[in-house]
Image (tube, rainbow, N blue to C red; front, side, top):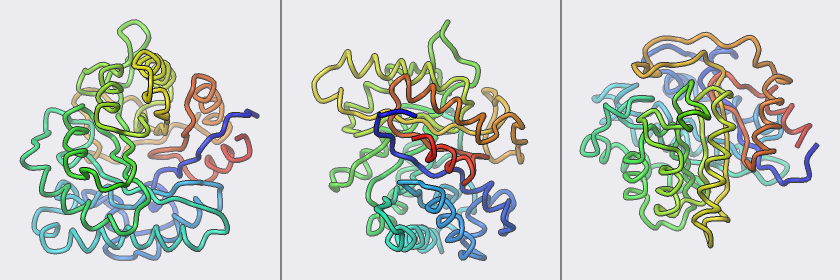
Length: 302
């Protein structure tokens, strides 16, 4: 048990939808349930609230042309994003305690692949998501960002709408203390944290990478914030790891349905969470393959 105030995020949505029998396939991923059976999305949000999450995230990650196709996005993207926001808002408002809604803003051009990012392509898609989600969310969560440039575009689009911005970066699996933790672009975590402060993010997080690389990233983030001083020291640090095997530089999240590691049971994941909290993380949750039972274990601990 720790005396530090920990904010609990929810866990992964896509794999939880698959587990409970929702429509689920690639390339649509978690968007397919939103399209065909949104009641399953509601059930996943309710499960995470019931497990103790303080924040639930809109199921808008896959509502992008990369997953649902350009024609479908042009015709239905805004409506699907708004639906994802409304479902999360309704579940949060019905909760017996205060639960916040984070508006998921994904990497528009493809997960893990900073080399595919084109601001001119991503800008109108991101603007559509922000416009549709804005009425429903308490703060923005730009997640699985592989490069600082993706974070800069998010700030441009959300601008100064008054809602807090959380920036969450995905890390090179296998990067460690020797070279220092790095984003999948190869950029240093310290530089990403400095950028997050410049972009007025109120939290900097690390997600959709292995638990093994998260601790060093938290330490690097804490050192960077302390070095910047002043208001930067108030920026919170968060972690929500995935349960995937290591993903190399050529990986992208929509190429295959990855296995889930057998060792990342709720008790196993909790051990990692204790380490992250000890290093200074105050926002903790789970990404792909981390489900309600893991969040319940975190709630019992924190």
